[in-house]
Image (cartoon, rainbow, N blue to C red; front, side):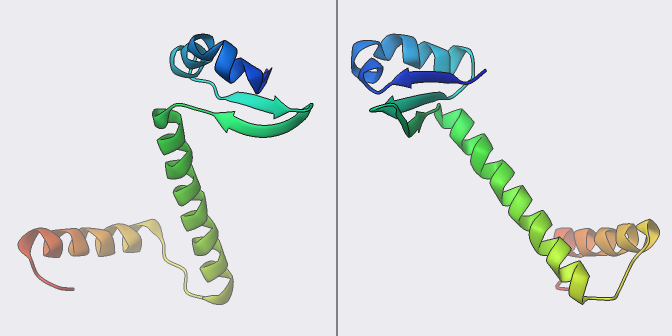
Length: 95
């Protein structure tokens, strides 16, 4: 269940909001005049959010590329190709 508070709680109950954000690991949604205004979250939560967004963006890009590129590879082909590139990178060779 989301934790929704009036924005005045940020000033009046900052310590409690900070505890919720850090100890419970949940964002706090703040309202202004009864409408959603902002979200307070820890730096760790924000970084996780950004990381998940980057992953989702990459997956969406891959899905879009798959729609226009007819090439398909099985696991062995992908694994072999990845291994070759990894070894080349470790050895300092461009592939």
